[in-house]
Each structure stands twice: as C-alpha cells, then as structure tokens.
Length: 171
Image (cartoon, rainbow, N blue to C red):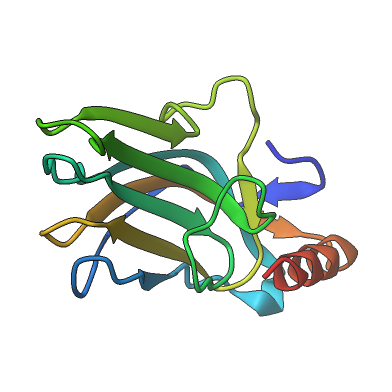
C-alpha cells in the first residue's frame, strides 16, 4: 500500500474505451473517478492492462496506433517521460520501402496487468483521468481499451494538498 495513505476500499476495476473520431485524429476521453475531495480521497493505481487496435498493414507506408492514460488532460499522446502519464501503448508497422505490409512492432507500459514489483503505479488525487488514442496513416479509426486496477484511499491534509498540486502542475 502507498505510504501515508489509508486504504478505504478493496480493489476496484475501471474499464473504458476510446475510439478516434476519424482516422488520424487525436481523441481523448475523460474517465470520472467520483472521488470525494472533502475527505481527501485519492485513487491508488495498482496495475493497468491496455490494448490497442493494430495499425493497418499498407504496402510501402509506415502506420501506427498509440495510446496513453494520464492524470491530466493532454493535447497529444503522452509518453512515459511525461510526469502525468502512467501507462502507454504503441503499435507500429514499418513498411516504407517494402512491397508488402511490412513488419509490426508493439510496446506496452507497464508490460503486464500485475506490476508485482511495485506497490502502486500512480496516485490520482483529482476526480478524473484521461484515456487518449491516435493513429498515423491508417484507413480505419484506432481504438484503445483499458482496465485500471486500484483502490480508494484517504490522505492526510498535507499529503492530499501536495498530491493535487503535483498532479495539476504536471499537465
């Protein structure tokens, strides 16, 4: 369990999906956590499982699909070096210069639904988090699906204030 937080629920699973509005258009969905700020309630993310539609295999054209989960709203797909991003997925097909559909590559972080080496992945102090998807050179809309595993916890006033400030400043 996260240090300085008092666990107030058992594990909760939050599932969701976001689909591009048109191929190649960054699309984001806000996921409501319904936290109670009057009680300094936070959500501790223990694990994440995400998947994304594969990119289209088009001869001689590089294609890709990307997604991210973040604590604050974004205008682009986040990467792990962004402090507000807690999970990413990236699938690419490298086909430029080939007569066929190319070779596919995929990366996901965290790389499993059970981050057994960590107590938690993130602590979300505001009421929501964001799921985003974006594709490149695809004919169809990209879709990202996710499950976030975590629990509700109560923070002290000082800890809660620091978490909220840190989260808002990371956007």
